[in-house]
Image (cartoon, rainbow, N blue to C red; front, side, top):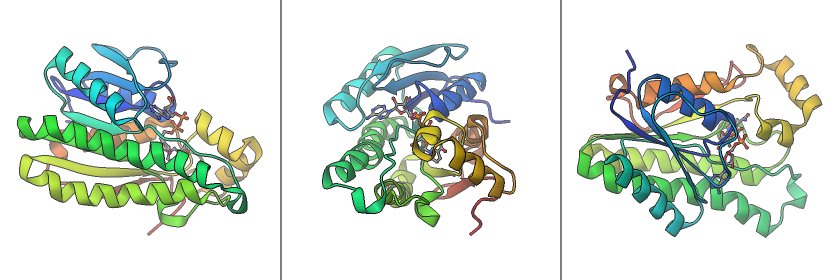
Length: 242
Ligand SMILES: NC(=O)c1ccc[n+]([C@@H]2O[C@H](COP(=O)([O-])OP(=O)(O)OC[C@H]3O[C@@H](n4cnc5c(N)ncnc54)[C@H](O)[C@@H]3O)[C@@H](O)[C@H]2O)c1
């Protein structure tokens, strides 16, 4: 079950955190993995065949080049994990139009550009998997008032639902994962250690790990998930029930 042998997976933001965990899990399931990140890989290399391309997902030309590099190297783009994301810890009244745009440039424009580019390859292959890493904030809003982050994550769900319709004729599915609070550098920097601990105490299953998200991504990327599209899979330890 859930083997990905022979598949080529592109993971944006795979240099660390959730993206690195997803990269390792996809590789362990047999996929060749290509990390597209603006930073060099900081987590250890995943097992098996892997490549990295340094690119900013918010930049259309860099995205184009990154996918072409993967396709040139391995001849396919079967799985896209749209994971690259940023958050800014700013109370609502301090959010400027520049910081609003900066968050949207990565979380929303980046996700769109990568999905559009990946679909160009997937439609010719007549198959593929697109997985957005959204957030529980898309459902419940941002706890600390950082509305740009929550709104960008809600936008990813609209993108996912639209993609599921656009992609279906080509045998491509599009789904989202909405993680709750996962222990990473981003959550520590955005929430701070004490808020993180307090929040963890209110969540039925406590804080999540990158592996919890990674396993959900492997399932959605697998052949077994072929009839699942347009959904948001909540991986939040019971933090938010809908
Ligand atoms: N950690 C959490 O609690 C949590 C919860 C819900 C959703 N998420 C989402 O999961 C994803 C990963 O979060 P994380 O906690 O691992 O974050 P992180 O900051 O640890 O890692 C993010 C990665 O994305 C890369 N990145 C950022 N901007 C980029 C850009 N413009 N182009 C290319 N790469 C870029 C970074 O270099 C980094 O490697 C994000 O989309 C985040 O919104 C995280």
